[in-house]
Amino acid sequence: MYLGQCTKDIIRWPRPASPPVVKLEVFYNSEYSMPSTHAMSGTAIPISMVLLTYGRWQILLRLDATPDMEKIEEQFANLNIVKRSSETKEPTYLLGIDTSKAVQAEKENLVAVLCSNGSIRIYDKERLYILREFSGYPGLLNGVKFANSCDSVYSSCTDGTVKCWDARLASEKPVQLFKGYPSNIFISFDINCNDHVICAGTEKVDDDALLVFWDARINSQDLSTTKDPLGAYSETHSDDVTQVCFHPNNPNMVVSGSTDGLVNVFDISVDNEEDALVTTCNSVSSVSCVGWSGKDYKQIYCMTHDEGFCWWDLNHLDTDEPITCLNIQDVREVVNLKEGILDYLIGGLYHEKMDKLFVVGGTNTGIIHLMSCSISGLIHVTSLHGGHAATVRSFSWNMQDDSMLTGGEDAQLLLWKPGAIGKTFTKKDSMKIASSVSQRVRVHSNDSYKRRKKQ
Image 1 (cartoon, rainbow, N blue to C red):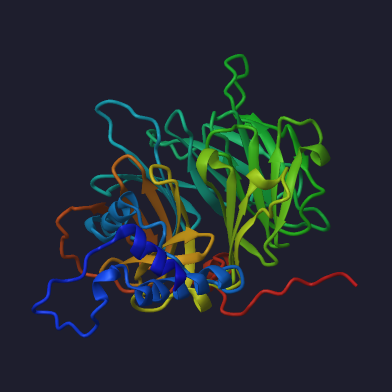
Image 2: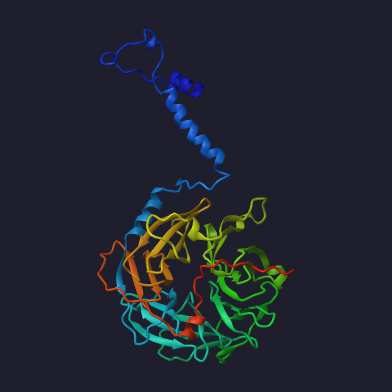
């Protein structure tokens, strides 16, 4: 009330003319009318309540709704299907997607897709036609990644190797083979940003769960197509290493995730494993996805097989500030969607232009949900309808033209673009896969994962 009275004396908005206002107080001219003391109180009380309770309860404030943010949200909302992949003789789940990064004149952009039958299909991006197919037989392939400087495509294999093919050659034989140690079964991998180092994670065999490294450079003096490991990390994970992800810009930084719940960050320029370990974060659940985000990619995030989400800021490692930005045990229970429900998480998307992290999820009927990430929580941005008829397993976002590729359990690869005229397509029915393949494909669990502690 005092603040309201003071602002009256400073701003001095005049009272309305009389008539038509009826004069009830003979001394009303001695006091200015605006701003009203009651209006000041009505504004101050709710703002004070928010400020006093902000650190105690989770309050979602859309303070990040800048014009740029609104533009990105509009782009997401305007995504339409412009192309659907052609029919295949053997329908499969589409488990992973990556696009070629090498820009070559007068040559089509390529898309590599990991399929549940253990093969990798190479598509022409604009037409979504299958150009060729590579197989890991007798092993099963896990993960798919293009090199950063050429059209070589990589995948780890359960036969204890990481295989490399030339995506523009029809030959099914790998051009390079990276052999692991005896008994290695690789289930995750990545190649660093300068294409010099490959790192692959293994299943736990006996007491060992390894991160194995190779020199990926091609030596003109060495005509051998098979390479042995440079070395391995063996002390930092106690269970299957499900995720490996190199830093987008720093070739020496890599993050790994495991079913033991740990997310480890390494600097591989350091000689030994103990000193190379930069930090360990605990998701308290089996890790299904890891990635980098934030300005200069100084943040990491992870998702878990029971739909949890964690986000850490590595800028705070040398400060007293906590590194945890967000920790949600089950996103399905806390996210407030504008429409529908959330059944599972697919992955993360860091938008460099916006310096914003987005989380992608979906429903069992094929609806895709996009959510923006802030320290206050996850906020639903938009949903994409009319594309898939079953669970969406994978996506790939293109920063250059803001297009998106999605793949799912309906065996469909879809190309989405903003502002494009949506085409009418017939949805494909969901498929059922033979039990041998179903056992290999890790499904999203509705049951919470509890970490067993040693007594």
